[in-house]
Image 1 (cartoon, rainbow, N blue to C red):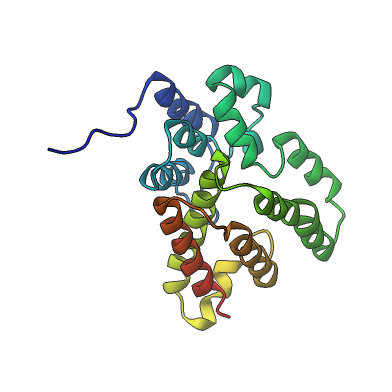
Image 2 (image 1 turned 45 degrees about the vertical axis):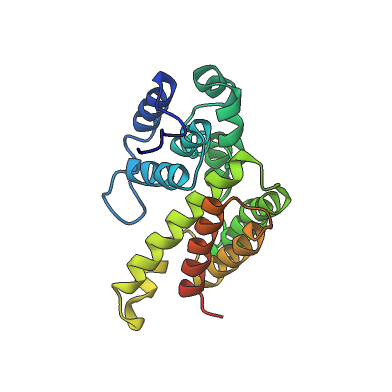
Length: 217
């Protein structure tokens, strides 16, 4: 006799699917015409398969909403509740409003200054946030799934290229190879923690494998 599912989709779960679909309906994955919803569904799938809760699965669907859409934290709390909103907030490195401000501020900046800002003001603080999280923080699994999805997607792109062509993959991103290496290597150490449940530990190993393939030691 098969086991019962650990949780079942509810109206609130399907509401999160609709919010994610509507919020990101005009977005695509970097360098493609693939609907961004594919990423959100992929991250949610990873969370579910790693043993995540319904709230974590909803957080996965919505993890980019506060960063990439005008939706604000109080509004999201009204829509999906405090627990899911805090998971989303735990995965957010900047808000939509702040991203628009940054775009205006950077209009006359050099690429070097933009790259330094990206690292020092956004990505390094995010790594520090992940480092400080305990293994039972519900946002940690969602963040790990998000970064694993991205890393594995990049690895898949790199495998399709010759060594001479791989620069075209890195050209899709806001910053180049060296900063991407700092970012992923920093994340790898931030996510390296004791006490993960088996499903999350397996997901960490997937992330580690992808990072090591992208950036061999």
